[in-house]
Image 1 (cartoon, rainbow, N blue to C red):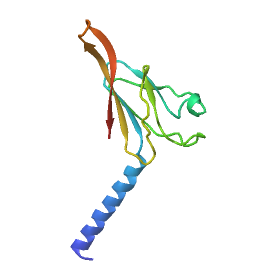
Image 2: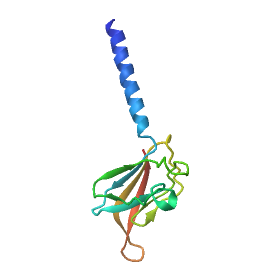
Image 3: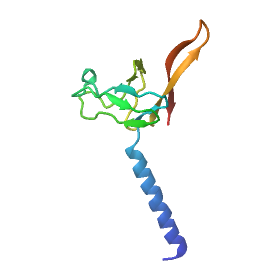
Image 4: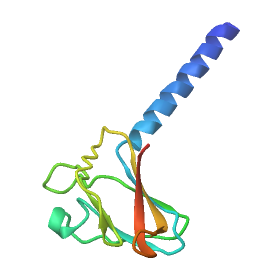
Length: 128
């Protein structure tokens, strides 16, 4: 085997490995906590009300991330439509197994100066 054909085979193997391993993580919800306090989240499909077998309260420590996939064992389709973190709720996300990852970044309190200083928690939503 020539040098070029060995190099081509190695590149092909690497591309195949990367594409196969990236498919495993498609469609995950990424909960990222950049605040200074822990957050607690619930996710569509992982509560009794959304078809799960139990209520899963996900605690994300400050500076940490947590990856959540779809619950494929529930009777409803394995789609994540909402997440609720510290009483802030998203909706209509339609996160599927074949779609891109979707990140929810929980940021520290935001100060608004319209009617004085009002602090409220903030989400930043990002598709990965």
